[in-house]
Image 1 (tube, rainbow, N blue to C red):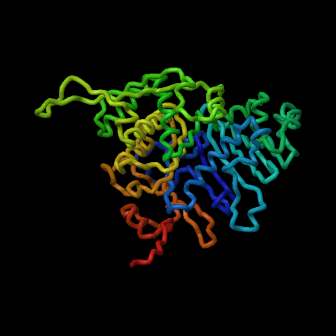
Image 2 (spheres, rainbow, N blue to C red):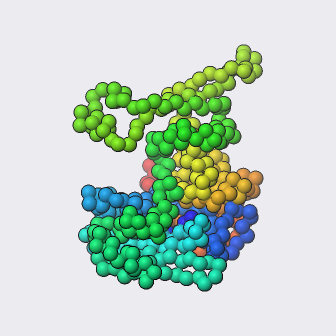
Image 3 (tube, rainbow, N blue to C red):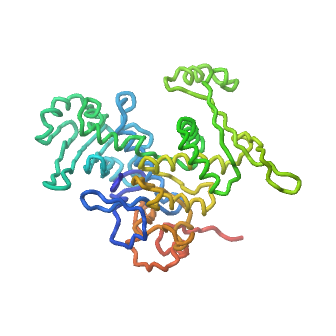
Length: 436
């Protein structure tokens, strides 16, 4: 579970900006807030709104880069300082040469431990790195700086020094020590990487249906219970599909389209990752001449006969329901893309509702969907609180800022979407088109 996330000098963010999931002392209205053993109340959902190019997506990109770098064991061929997502704030001569800062705090509900971790990376590699562990929440609470790194110089806590000090020579400047230590059997680093893993934190580009569909098909094929939940979601979303059949066959090079270069074909077929062909069929009810529903179904080819919106709903439902079932984190860029506002609102409700979110799953999303800002938007159920609404905006120097609605004086009955579109909170474009 993510407690907060901070970046500095990353892409459009020049100054330090933090996204906090700590709940403020507001009336929770039944929202599925989780409480750590340290007494921190952690939100299930935060949404980031703002203009195009305001910096919303850079928050998600930063989390994706941080996760990928921490899990990257191929740091010789793919050094973390050469990653395509890594970029400082380029519009200042001061920041172009400074390191980029990432920091995250996570709660481990299984072992009642909080991890505070961060690193800074520059053009030549890792500049600094640190891992703090806070445990023993019930009594004798303690905080330990497990290790602190300045370039290639390390300091270790006395409780781990004997185990980690001999391993520091294995840490290259293009790699993160937490990854090296975890792979060399350090239990603290290994557990932290489990929390940050792609199984626990899913970073999703909401505009890339192909990426979403690959995951969805694999999960629905292997998990019958999950598939049934997805079908039920589709039915409840007022999409007239009675059943979804997913068939899988082994991938063969002959399945590739004609004209693909031999080098690319060899790269695809020689990959160690197993590859499959999926065929998806959806079943729709048949009707007689009077419009009465018959007991027979008609099969549709999912990829050819269902709309792109329906395809996306199946993919999204799989990812989000899977996260709710397992208490995972989903960081979703462009939630609501190609979806009706009512359905987007319902997705947020699933994470807000303690009955559907029993395991502390979290949803961090960006969106242009102002319907999500409305109060009493769908039967007054689980609207976003003030501390769950964030705005990404750009200042005069084109640097992004991140602010919570809680920083503004607002009344509960305010029409937030209307006032947001009026520019009361910033984070909206100032259009300068000439008429005529």
